Image (cartoon, rainbow, N blue to C red; front, side):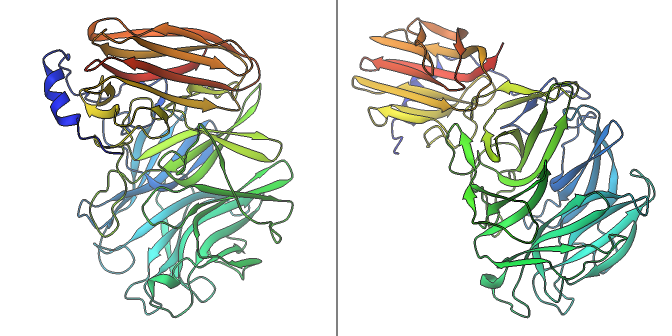
Length: 495
């Protein structure tokens, strides 16, 4: 959708807008929630670099292992980083397990990806399994699989080398642990081919040997040319298999299927989302973290976002932040992904909460795009994002002629209860009408006026009750010629 009014209107509004300083992360600041659509920092104030990784719980401590890329635009290996946390929200950097050095698998400029940290109860060893660059190895342009192990989770990891997987190179993988058994779940390449089209063309499940340091023949293989980032979890007696679309660095819709057996699987379906999202809220699926508490067991969807890696051969789409963690709920065996902009975690109760609005701060697009994950109705070209928000971008309604516009999100799978909907706003106060709207499913619409003069950011809010798990929120503007309304930081939270 064209946004040709943006530049002139930014100049018009500049005198009225409040000048805001850039947000700077504070060292060792304790967070109470996980902010999606933002970069994450560890407790020392350092940038949290853990792409394509995994989380392992050891006692009451969670360990997150992931990749730090070198800053050369080619996604080269920079480090295998290890972080720890006791609340899944505030993370402390422990160390770099491996860094580029020497020649061979970890030589500078090589590729190391998707490290999985697991614990083998039979050998009492922590095992690190990761993709290793296959270039120069004589087995083709794909990746090998590499193994390392340690007697303690924060100890020194001994590298045991790398190998092809069942005679072929591979792409994305994960490790599924079921008691004392572990399985490599991976996307395989066509053996011997150097063509890009022959990368990630099969999906496979292969047991690991008893020491988890080598791969046995696959027990399940299917030809598949459209999925990668495979991951299996067990819920009750059922196995749930998730995967992303095969679109390299770009965000994609997530696929899902469920089975009672690892050797027989039905067709894939697209993971449901709330509100609607065509690309899993600008993420590539990575892994799932179960949280079991006194009240319930919840699941965190951990998505990777490669928006900070612009450039290179396959640039990612626009957006903010390298990671996004959101609630994944189940109705029977059917999961739904909820696009929370902020996530709160109660490890004691197992409950997840936070801001249910997706793209609540309008950071998921550039200044020439409409608001992602918001549905739009009304006069074309009356809405656009721009800089000068509370922390970054804001969304502004404006048109030189009279206009009528409405943006909204529809939610399913909400916990019943009382919710507060709030928004921060700037406004000319010259509309025929401007409203913040809450529509509980099966209930009565609640709204409040946004048609007041506001040259500094002010907060408006309403409260309504959800009784059937569904609701719609929105901002409606019936604007006169030249009237404007800027909004930011939309929040829907359960009281």
